[in-house]
Length: 230
Image (cartoon, rainbow, N blue to C red; front, side, top):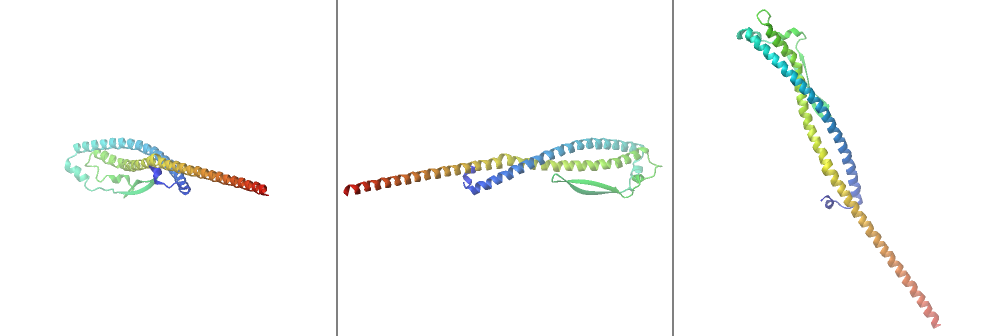
């Protein structure tokens, strides 16, 4: 048990009391961190769910437009129209700190600012369904990046929540109870030692008083005997 591994001294008692205060303060801070992480995680999960539904619906519409475009055009014409993209997208990744968790942030920029550069073909020999498919892909890109950012953030925050939960449980159910038990053990031992010391002192005092009383009686007897002799 914990109490057999500690020295029952006042210095050890002071050290354990300081350790207990630090553990209790850390336990409170970690609980606050865990609760705040959970709150932000649940908010992010709701955003992630909404974005996923939106992205999946947009991808479904995009696929439908491509199917219609393929039905209205021959395969060779479709391949030629999409062979040489005119616009380029540059993705940049950065990080931000959320409750000690480094979550990603994705931003992008296009090679040109002209929104019509997403069409890499002329409109004379292509169908309007292809235009709608290309436009839907361009429109869905920001939401897809945001979805990737949210899903990775949820992943990282879930890992941090689990780590924080384990630390809180270790402090709450292991470290703090063991430290309190050790403090109780040392306090009990010191109280026993103090009572033993007081008992010994009282015995020594009684012995000294008894010896003084016996010595006084002896002196009185000797004085009386001296008077009788005279």
